[in-house]
Length: 431
Image (cartoon, rainbow, N blue to C red):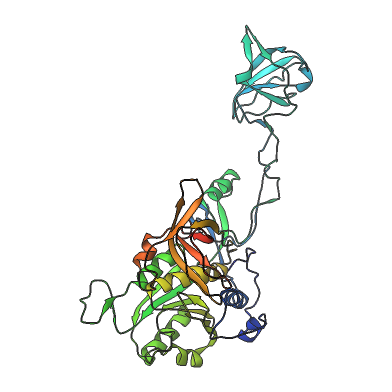
């Protein structure tokens, strides 16, 4: 999902309205781009807001524009250590001797105003003394007795920060829909703002399905495996700063699954499950969703992650991810993550691909999007190269642990030869 505009506060579209944006609609084999468009059209952000202290705002989504209450900077000031002068006093083609009339320090007023032909020693951040408009950096000057020698060639207004050149009173300092970052905390503090309005935290319920799953700490019987998906989901969801509702492992039983779905829909804004969305005999999600809610699609033309459900149960949006561990992570990052950000009221950042030259051949047929776990690094010539992490089976979770990127082979793309260029989505900043 690549739309970078903030999610509008509009009512959610019905399933019929959402799929109406597609020229062709097949819920059993939806291209990745079409699936993203359907999801985006059905979502609407949470409406409730709260006031929080700025230290509590990190990672939260701003509910309103933050308007600057002051000019930034609040006064003309020096951008460098040097000498504040009036540019009209400088000779254009020869050095100029100016009397040093004192020192202006940051945070302290300077007075009285210097006279014509005076220079003022000025520190970075100090208010420009009255009548001065230019700062000459100290490295190019020469001191003689109580005077400073300024070389020719100085530009009028150089090294001076103007009042309000960063922000004017009443202009937006931070925009609605922004996820507050560390630099934003500093910006808010610099404006004297102690509290901001943020969207309430999104509530996300998540669970795994399968009789073969056991939680960490439980003994394994023959044929059983530890549930890794809930832990990866916990990690990925935690990065979004949402309120987590861990519902554990749900058995392959229609009554148990329906109870879990109803419970989750009653307490969460979004539901994320892993497993149970394919066509196996024990996969009951389809029949339950037919009773409880709407489903926009069941499968996406991608690998890994073909079985992927998206729909709605009451007011809660449902993301039915596959059961294989790698497929869970791929579908979360390329579908659920951006959708949850939109539900939070945030403006999802566009996917910024990095181009790299492949060190190996990658086989692919047009007609689906494929995701290869890989390692990107600089080559001997400085160009970025990429190689896969080995076996690309959707159950090989170590391939994701070793990778620092995903190679995205797009829907209409064919096989890539050795040395071919590919798009990589870096994990840094994502995971």
